[in-house]
Image (cartoon, rainbow, N blue to C red; front, side, top):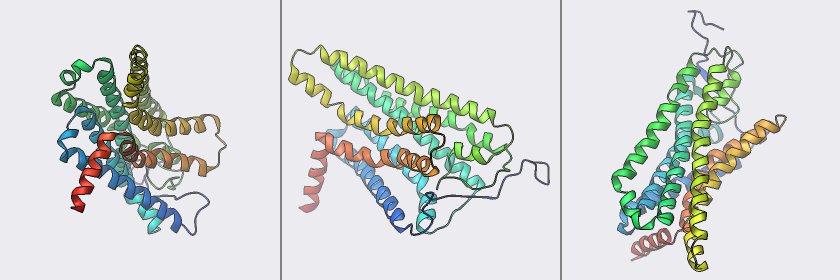
Length: 314
């Protein structure tokens, strides 16, 4: 479908959707989203501030945690404008180009999270399997290089997406199924040949989530082998306990992704509300849970929080 000047037709604005079946009395939904955003933003900013201010936390593990917190802030801030506009102000329109920009940042930060979790698993692997060389392997320059590598990989693999979408005509309406812009959602209202988009999208998912999750599992297989070789049961539990925060973060990130994939593959007749809610869990729960997980499970983080709290009370 072409416009008057022969270019593919694209709507000036796209219409966002809240949660199917909840068109009225959305005040409680808006309140839930505001609470999620508040916990996520305050929690991740607190982690970043804590690592920056406390010299005891200037270690590789906490530098990677800072990357995770910074990325989680990016995920939250990417969705925040349209989600709050939809649920708090009942404004459901977004410009087509603005939608493409939001789509790019949401997917980029999501894929970066997977890479950061892989880097954190490597950190745990070196700390447990080769502790004597830990400081030599994970120097500040190498940690910086890993962070820049994750950013570059995510940016370059996601950069073509807006242009691949931009070339398509949109003749199936302009109503999206979420309160933010996602590539699969845009494909549902696009017409023309979407094979390139779908094939490239599958390649990116395999290249990021598939490869990252495989190496995370491999890291923990090697960690488990090293831990089982420790004679003392107390030392074994202590070694495993240093991984618990990361394991919880990995589960919080990958379980919703697997659930969304399973629903799309095996429950195609699922009500729209199921797809929307699972997508919301995938985008909103990890940024909220990660600072809570590390605050509860990591003794050094708890100690730093208490130290700052006591200083503020003095």
